[in-house]
Image 1 (spheres, rainbow, N blue to C red):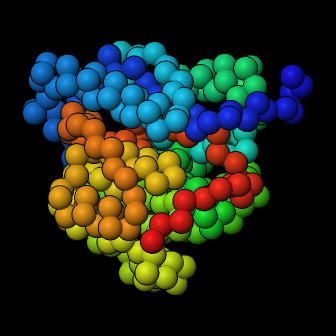
Image 2 (tube, rainbow, N blue to C red):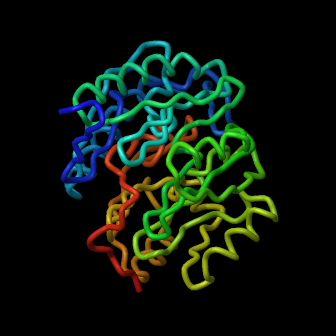
Length: 297
């Protein structure tokens, strides 16, 4: 395989991290509670990660798992490692020192993926900017654009870098709170063109952008309880949505729209401010239109 070739997987491919070193030992977002962490949570985290991996595989996905690194508990959230599209990986640059040690670990992972032909090119962000990967750059396969969060973790000035790197449209959405610090905590494009989102997480200008871009019939507003359960932080594969345990209200809403739910107990990871989307990084996304799409009602 030549340097410019990339092997496109024939099924959805995700990066996950062994949770053996996961804990909540510091506080860089309002969800994190080191005082609430216990050995029982560590055991539950291993079970939750395994259940998420099994759910992805049951939905037709393939999971690449990387090793845990002690002292880097948030390595279990590889969505923040990079933005990946068409075999190009734009590496993250973390705002908080607690996570900056993840950068060389993920770089080594992507170098191995490149050697195998899974990734074609690795691109670095300018040193003056922060950007925390797919957590703040979510590819919308229906609209063929990136929704780009900025504010708490990612620099708005990083968004033109994404546009130049991938050659795709970018839509900036400013986040209004430290609680919903990454876009993936409050915004989830779904197959069929629907979008699940939590309106209070956005500034008025960002909400106006969402409303201008997405018709009301395609907007699914999460409640405060649904957002706090980290159900918006979900993985969507066609009609299947894999998410943390959901309130009955959201189950009913999504099923009425034609989606099928797989719920996983991810409560230990929610103690750190992350769930299903944060715990995975999609490696096989392409900017080309899909051959078949789920048409939700």
